[in-house]
Image (cartoon, rainbow, N blue to C red):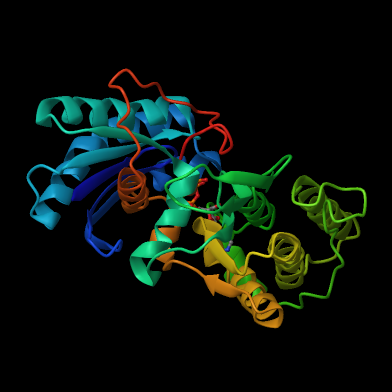
Length: 343
Ligand code: ATP
Ligand code: MG
Ligand code: FE
């Protein structure tokens, strides 16, 4: 069975094609992504209208490239992200998916973007046991419990304000590192001391929700610190600020992920989302997983950021799980939560 996945929830137009094999593994046939990230750079964040328009321009060429790369004229099914994401951006992918499903007379499967970030790991590392998933990207910070990729996913916690990647981008901007500044901040942090400044670890107090996150406090603390330096006429120790901020974010993320593994007795942790490219998030998670006897699975960086392959892979699991196709009248669901969605 060959499944095409279409992703357009944020600033990446992704079309992926995978083959579902009889032994419940998936093989990657095509992975085409067009990103509008450069168009958002001068605004310092994703501009929804700009993203929608870029999807509209990119969707057909990206689909064509994927079909050519895979040597597939017509897939057996189409999976598409219906949420969560930007309303106008989602509409483009969903409209294209519906049009092709109707024209090719193949079933359409509307799936949840977040499940895709987890499912994509099976491409490289094989079938997925029950796991805890930590998703960190520019738009999302979620701690999930995934018992079965074809079944509903349970959300344990999420951010109450900024997403982790968004906090990286905002702090990077404050430090004059450009947009999206996550990778630049990571590089600068390598030269700094992570213990130089004790930035706050949000929502880690005894009365805080066990699995929720908050990153606006640490972001404000960095802003205050920078202002204080400037007022005093001192040079901002950029590398130390970057390293200390990164340490605070990585500490909270991994601490809560390990807590979820411990509380649930689940011994596999999957990371996903573009911010998992962060070197400290990776190294701290690896160290804490090793200490706790938890198996860590991280897809390769290209598959951690938004792409169509993750949607195709999730679609393949959903189909294999026996789910009925979606109606061609299915709507987008920008605020889609993981609990209420089937997949
Ligand atoms: P979505 O939230 O819908 O999954 P997105 O486009 O907001 O999508 P991704 O494309 O998955 O997010 O990831 C981009 C984010 O990851 C940006 O916020 C970027 O700064 C951050 N990021 C990438 N590399 C690093 C890094 N090495 N360190 C910290 N953050 C990083
Ligand atoms: Mg992106
Ligand atoms: Fe994403």
